[in-house]
Each structure stands twice: as C-alpha cells, then as structure tokens.
Length: 115
Length: 120
Image 1 (cartoon, chains in turn brown, blue):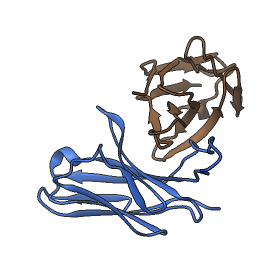
Image 2 (cartoon, rainbow over the protein chains, first blue to last red):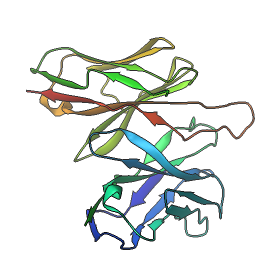
Image 3 (spheres, chains in turn blue, yellow):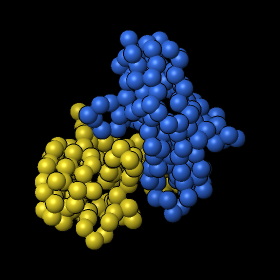
Image 4 (cartoon, helix red, strand yellow):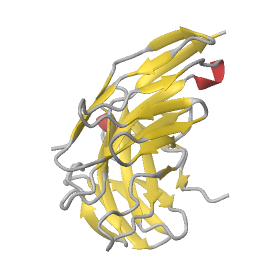
C-alpha cells in the first residue's frame, strides 16, 4: 500500500535559518506529491505540489523536488520567518486504478521559528 | 472566496450522546473527505465520497460512525453513541477530480477549519 514517512518533530529554528523537512514515500503506482501546511487553529492548506519526477514545486519561498530514484520529496526554505511556524504534512495521491485518488498523509512535523 | 464550511466548530458532549457534524463543500467539487486528527494518530481518513457516492469508509468504526451526503451541498458525519476516545478534531475537505483522461487533477484538497469534539 501507499505510505508517507516524514521526519519527526518538533523542529525549532531561529529566524532566517535554513529549513529542511525530510519526506519519503512508498507507492504502488506513480503518485503526485504534496506539502500541506496547518497554521494553529486552522485546517490544512496546500503549500506546493509536484506531479512527475524531477518536478520542483515552489510557493512562498518553500521548495520541494520530486525525486523518483530516492522516493523523496524534501521540503526546504532558505530563510524561515516566525510566520512559518506551523505543522507541515507531506502527502501523496496515487492516480493508479483502485486508489481512487485519495491522499495519504504523513504524521506531520511541527515547526517553531523563534525571533 | 470559496471555502469549505464546517459546523459546529466546537462541541462538548457526554459519553453516549449522539453527535452530528456537518460540512458544506465548495460548490462544484465532486469529492468530499472526512479526516480525524489527534495528537497520537495524526490525520486519519475516515470516509470519502465522489459525486455523493461513498467510495471508501474503511477507516471508520462501523458500529458507531456513519457518513452520508444527502445532497451535493451537505456532508454529514454522525457518531452514535459517542465515546471519550472519539475526542478529536474532525476535518472535512473537498476537491475536484477530473476523470476520464487517465490523469485526473487530484490531490489539491480544500479543508474546512475543523470541528473540535470533546466527549466527557
């Protein structure tokens, strides 16, 4: 079956530090990959996505590259801000038959950025 | 600004009581999901629907949980009877899946703000 493994948190950084949150996946088909972000007290919202190998998703200074050879989709940001404090979820959507396009989420990584 | 609307935002109830949570998906979306979030388990998929038909409810305890879509603008999740272990935040999410092309445009889900349930 499909699964997503992401680094356990919490991650605590100082403002302007470099961020990496690791994510690896297992899928039976050829999935699309996503990062969702959840700010305190809110629902999840899509941060970025990539639909095929070597694609790079980017948004709000965050980037992640779809690496088929290592089955990874690590999230990076060069300089984090206090406002980036949130829980980050890696997810995949397998478009192959039988999976019905549902999303499989990792357990989430709590990021806290201190001023 | 289209958004997924969930009610109630907060619910405190006693063990054994019936709880109904409601969700209004974004107009035009054909897929609706119910997720449960807890600190211990993270996000768990409970059920999902496409074009109002249930596709997968294997994540739901069948003896006490039920999910329905009486029409395209309303999805409900009912717990009867509720138990303390049901305490969690329940999220509804909707999305648009375009079928027939072999690729779809799946994955971008729009989440509601959640219903925080506390069962005493």
